[in-house]
Image (cartoon, rainbow, N blue to C red; front, side, top):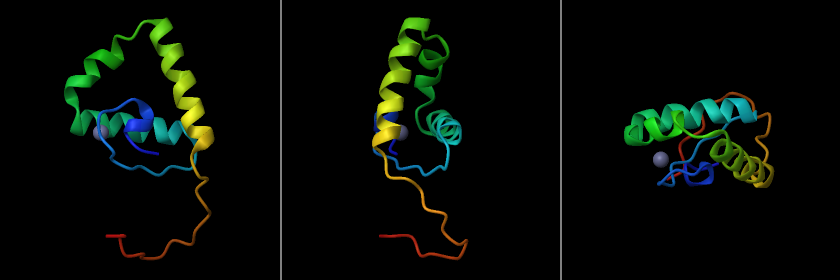
Amino acid sequence: MTCANMGGPCDHEMVAETQEEMMMKGMEHVKAAHPEMVHDIENMTPEQSAEWQKGYDAAWAAAPMVEEAPHEDVPMAA
Ligand SMILES: [Zn+2]
């Protein structure tokens, strides 16, 4: 999934095997790349949070599943 899939402003791509892991990675990315968003995220109302969750669930459902790939050194795709 990309940062944009999670409501972020960029196309930074992240890979995770579970929704929870993806959420954590997304949060780490936001803190590192978009620190100005952290305050907004932490101060979302329950309504905003539920709305965000709906979009996130849909994006997650649409994202390709991560395959159980063997852990070997794969060169980064350019
Ligand atoms: Zn981003």
